[in-house]
Image (cartoon, rainbow, N blue to C red; front, top):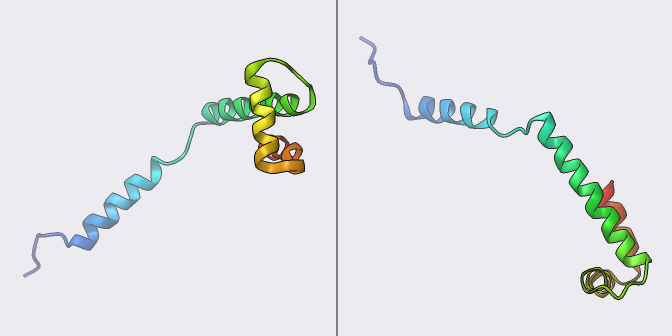
Amino acid sequence: MPSKRTSNAAKRNSRNATSAQAVGLSPLQNDIIGVVLAVVAIALFLSIIVPSNAVITSAMGHGLKLCFGTGALLFPIAVFV
């Protein structure tokens, strides 16, 4: 006579199936993230290219140049792409 209990493996598989469905983002959330990343990339690029006496933009530009050196110009491009 078969038992009515489910195995632990069956319980784990059902939990994994439900958690895998909740991972994705909605298309609207993807669009918002894309726009925010594009704005941040443009701001970073401008902070490197345009000389400024403003505290935040000069700190961002100097920080990128300190971290990446000459490659600091490539970082905003990589964020944008």
